[in-house]
Length: 287
Ligand code: NAD
Image (cartoon, rainbow, N blue to C red; front, side, top):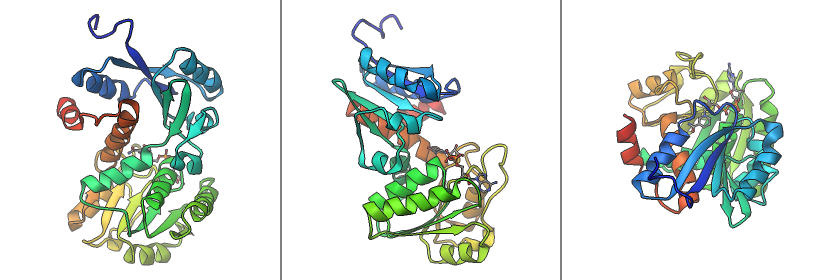
């Protein structure tokens, strides 16, 4: 370490709370070292109301860039100088790049989702997606899929505080990409869910169902799946959700959430350094 950190080492940070469990410091520091970059990455536990001070600190200490995690993603979007097109639509960021004092906010969750599909041989352009969920992950991947040329997106959500979010996303996509057909339906309408899946190319679970402690549960009746449907999940803990297992047993192409997590981090790495993250080496090291 005494050889790694010097007086010129550039700092990258993670801001949010809690951050102690995050895999990001290990992933980025491994990659910096692998590529001989004079950078270091540290996590800082910061509450929402402390974000204005934290952003000032990024400027003061000339921090090169930062990730932002829950619950600070929306407030951070109001504190930077510029937003990427997707971040502008979504109103939340998970990456800040400090370009000589100018802070630009990006959101890479949707980029990670699209890349994860691509790594599994699937393009979103021209495709119809059914997405269950209307929270942070769902919104990011719905907007990015629309920006990347999806033909149609049908959003299903249970009747809770997130439902209105789905309608907001529908309106925002309509404004930014009017050619994309976006519809919102209640998840309770199972006949509609079945008929929308029947005409879709890609089905996505972007809810917390399937994640511990809701592991072993799925919101999709296995009878609604078919072999040529691509099935993706945002949940990465467990690595394979019940939905992914049901889809795999039918022979569907699947894209579990761990890949999305890796590729959203890799997209941030590229924004930070201008280089591709050594993802193969990191995965081998992590295994
Ligand atoms: P969120 O709290 O913003 O949204 C939660 C969503 O789950 C809402 O749509 C809500 O209506 C739905 N929901 C909650 N309980 C439900 C139930 N019992 N039945 C049906 N729907 C229910 O959460 P988020 O940040 O969007 O995260 C969602 C999942 O995606 C989590 O498992 C999270 O770990 C994962 N995630 C993965 C990545 C990645 O890179 N793979 C990135 C972000 C989030």
